Length: 448
Image 1 (cartoon, rainbow, N blue to C red):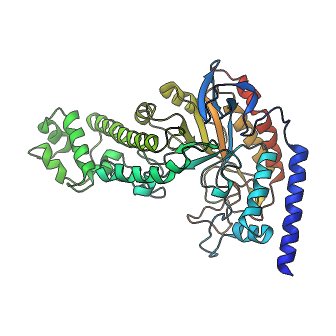
Image 2 (cartoon, one colour; image 1 turned 90 degrees about the vertical axis):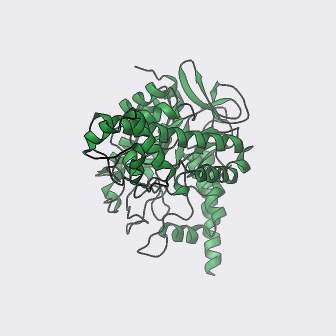
Image 3 (cartoon, one colour; image 1 turned 180 degrees about the vertical axis):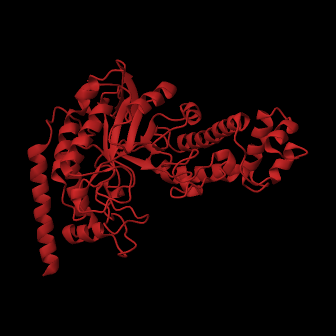
């Protein structure tokens, strides 16, 4: 009897979702099957690519229509696992509601289309791929030892890193090389490029703490040799040390002093690190899949100049995650001035205290009400669409986090839907309005 009730409820939900979608979908003449805007054409290539048309950057879909990536992250049937509960409350709720992942995926896609979204963002259920255009996060460094929580940085100068990256690209990119619904690949998410909330260290100092046999330690020492013009006496004077040669520094374990020479060394090393990372990523991805975009590494709120100057030769798009009450307009202009590459905001969100969730862990500032949450969201998205080099925005995330906390304790009202899978009506109403006007706003954008 219980299974019959679940089945009946699921059928009702699917029919209701389909009716809502059919009643509220945009005009058939406005968007194509990929979500491209049929009012403006670029070049038809059969795959997503980027184009600058009359001074404005766009993604262009496989049929040649311009496309702004309006995405959502973590659209995932399994939700967020809660260690304190021993299960994912969202997953438990949708299992009871839909019966299986296929029914959940059907309703979820209808919802996203109704709300004007056209992209499946990072960490989403693969069952959604191809129902809408999608992106893949490769975690090339993360799967090699980079730690998002601690900021640990792996020794990517090792030959093993390139072998690992190639294996990962062949496994994740090669099977998708002919998929027209795939927009492209993020190489990683929120890698540490220097001092941030996870560590106060510069990367050069991280590598000076490695053992002498590490390939990255040798690169670090060679950078010091280069910056000090092979003058060990000059380095000894600043470090108040007595090294007989730069080779001795291989056995030095510790951080370096402050000062102009060491600041220069840190900058030089960061460039070498970025060159190694992005050149390897580019090589292995393009060998496995020459057809799709490389969408950057999803910077965590800032992007060092050294890294931007290097990566522009290896990516098609710069991606950055930014949580703030206002969009980072000046930062985005700065990034574009260096790279001349189009930019995507790949995480942003707002949370509200009237949700009943603690909102004590998780990025961003908690607003008092859902109304303010929706209004700040509209203001944020509208402001970035007015920049001619911004080609997409991905909301974090589809569902709220458990009030008891996910794996890292985050417990915030980030969702388009609640933990019971019911929408936050005002937020999705505002998103629907923004998403349907996005292309027209962007078409009027200027560099002023």
